Amino acid sequence: MSHINETLHSLVQITPGQSEREETFSSSVHDQNFNNLVSSTFRQISETNTQYKDVINKLSQSPGFTSNPEKLLALQNYVGEYSNHISLVSALARKTVSTIETLEKSQ
Image 1: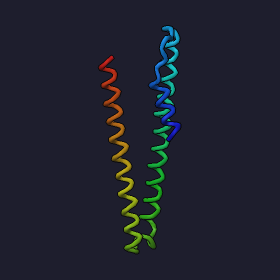
Image 2: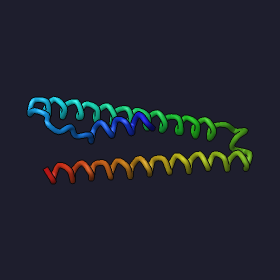
Image 3: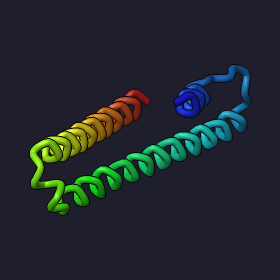
């Protein structure tokens, strides 16, 4: 989490007194940092989604697991958590796109 905070801080940090060349270079560095942040976050989300799917599929295909009501409740909880995770990712993606569009319009 602190890595993300440091990256975000470096993205929004403004250093006064830079020449135009330095500002252009700084902008490209900040763009690269943002790209790295987005790609690493997407990779982490994809891995989490894959883990959720694997657990749900393995549990749902196990006859010993699906015949026990207590274990079915655990499976239902996994499915619920997966659904919540997907909803959160979807909402964050929409908000991110909306923020970027707003920033582009303001420039």
